[in-house]
Structure formats: structure tokens, C-alpha cells
Amino acid sequence: MELYFTRHGKTQWNQERRFQGSNGDSPLLPQSYEEIKAFGKKVKYVPFKAIYSSTAKRACDTAEGINKELASPVEIFYTDKLREL
Image (cartoon, rainbow, N blue to C red; front, side):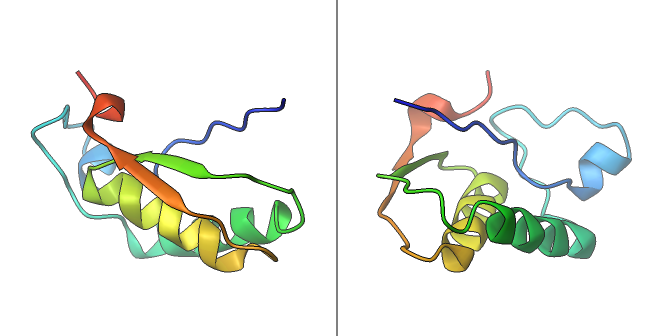
């Protein structure tokens, strides 16, 4: 089994070097959506079985953006267990 790990796209708070943790959820930057799409195209033909994502909006948006680019989109499982501490 192969696992792929990716971090959510860059947010405004990342750019400002502000701490977000599990309670902050700064939106993704416009450039992040372009990077997410590019990454999705890069892994387009990887035969993923599922995507697991934190429930943070920045992570959900990243997972959904990648999934949209896949040749065979998969179910996304959202869990608070993947939120930052």
C-alpha cells in the first residue's frame, strides 16, 4: 500500500506567519487553488482508494480541489482526528 500525504494550501495566516492551530481557519490564498489544481493533475492517474481530510475548511478545500482533478474521483472522509493540535 502506498500513502500520499499533502498539506493544505497556503493561507493568509501562513503568509503572515500567524499560528492557526485547530481553532483558526484562515481561508486559502487564490494562488493556492492554482497549486492544488496543478497537484491534482500531477496525481490524476494514481489509483487512490479514498482521501482523508481534516474538517478544517482549508484542508477540506484542498482535498476537494485535488479530488476534482482525479481521473477517478474517490470518496473523501472528513475527520476531526486530523485537525492540528
